[in-house]
Length: 237
Length: 237
Image (tube, rainbow over all chains, first blue to last red; front, side, top):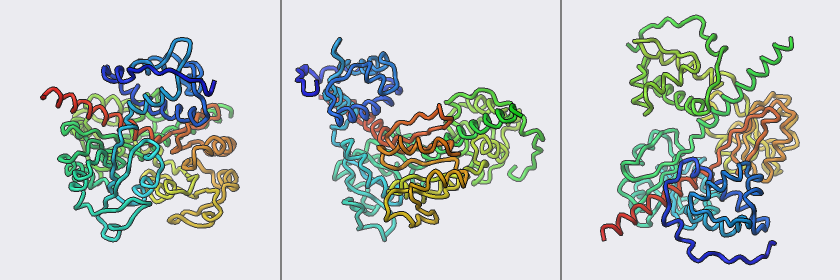
């Protein structure tokens, strides 16, 4: 089954061109499909039924069919999904094949850790440069990535058509930097600061990773588990 | 108004003791209240109406009242909220005052960046140790935090009553390490690996930061913005 040859439909662009409204919930699930399909490919799996994919991803088969139908289906009755084809389509929908260019603003601990992370390359995003205000960092490199002066930010983004700015600077600077990017090609901000940014009126997309909020959600869960244990114990006594 | 004295109700524990079911959506918003209240305190604001808080947080005043009512209200008709009191209550609900102890597993770039992050201290979480398998890292310190050998993990967690394990190791190791923690006091896993973990049957709470998924959600948004721009341009022509 692994080396079976599959005839792909020739009009693979059609579905994407006539894309309907897709809910945030579906969009949030797409990266999971990307991850699971990557794993299947790494294992050499060429074909998977929605049932098998469902068992693996812990979502219902009907959910999978519904999700993928938002983008035109990709499955064949009685055959299931061609893993490589589905992966290629998900990559296309998610922009993995778009060749986005990113810069990281803030060359502190988190900025450096991100710069060295394989996550960007795996998702087709090229981290071209980092920016910082600290003179001692400017001119250094993190891995292969040069750290440039903040003064050069707008010019650099225009010259190299940067798509994504990753915000890892102190939150106090986040608003000012966001405003400086308005008249640049940067369309996406990946925000790791605790500052909330809304740049929709400027046609920019913001995706935030509020790590502190996530830590607190965990702590909230911990408190509830501990309360339940205490209740249980007091019930036993 | 800033130095006005407020009589706090004496039975502040009552509401928390009789806590009703709280939806995930409310729980996810609580850390935002924490952040905004911190800022208000830093600015010296002692009292705020739900209307003012609403304008600041970009949620409706009725949403705020509803959210806080899940935990017993805390506001007074015609007065608004006492900022310090509300902050103290939110801290209590979120476990900021619980003194949770954490270890970071994986002393790579991300683990190091997290170890040096002020986020833990701000939320009352003490990072006590890091663990790694690489001999050259064991015995070193990151900031003040010692890097210990993975062999010591379970013993350490039991001896020091560790509550939280932060997963920053390669995703291939995530499952095995999670299983090793089952019979330890670790109740919460803050998971930065791409591996999905479900440990509910063992009474553990998992909160994941899937950074790669977040990056892909951003890229998805970028693709849609670019499509819209292209459509606009082709419409002009």
